[in-house]
Image 1 (cartoon, rainbow, N blue to C red):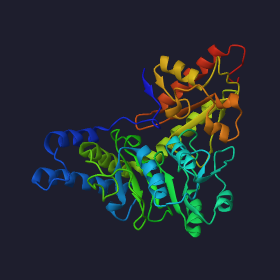
Image 2 (image 1 turned 60 degrees about the vertical axis):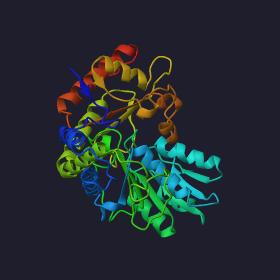
Image 3 (image 1 turned 135 degrees about the horizontal axis):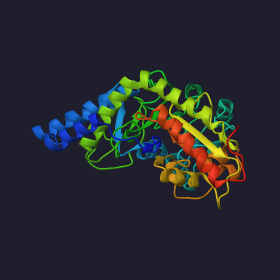
Length: 389
């Protein structure tokens, strides 16, 4: 039995996206910047995908979508693109639970003289809007708060935070890579100026992402060249990949009303069963949470003998794919910085695991995974009574 439960790391490319990519690769392979028929066919494909991605977040104009190579580039473009507008370093604000695509980019700006405030979070991983209000300064140019935290699943009060930033006059960016396609997002109503998306989190191909830029918002491009993407991201567009992204975005929007409740039901079923395991505690917000996301940590983790990564390896041997915290940290045996920021001990922060659900996940998959996890913990910690009753 093979059960994949790491959909926050990546999703399998859906067959509809693969089909359109094959068509593009064989029939519409022109350079979209070329003026001849081959180029214009490719340009039409890119613009159709722009409409589809804009539809996923209800953007008023497709031109507000700037295609990138993925969510990381979209995050970098948002942060650095705004920062490069200023000849003198200013002040910006992020949360202490941002994805590394944000936190590492901001660390670089800090080295260049920018002042950075990192907002603390509570034990659930949520930012207090009052803390944001207090942190704003006269020279705060940008605030970036993650929409849905990839490691612990907590969804931030983005509308409330955005309104605070807007009333101050700064720009507001959110990394919505984990939330898009799983939660309804309407950028015409949401007070965000910049929003990052990723194709491979919504069953599109790897290698494509997008940055939503509210009309009227200025920033400097990171890549210079031929002026593609409205002059905001030079480089020949990856037409087949972008086309697959567009198809995935359109289908995600269509399926949102049915898939999200289904995932919430499965998620809550998993949490209820995992609660039977002493020492394995839920992390993140129980209510304001990504619909597909389950995260736990071992109170008694031991970096030498038992950690979240130990559980990942053991479940992998049983044919089950889960994650130990953020996938981009999977090679390091060190406490999760996200769990530490939330107030967990170093020991518990070594024991974090993430189970994320998707299109192919069934109740049987959830039940089997919980059973295997119980057996693994009983075998690894025979001196502890791990299962109630």
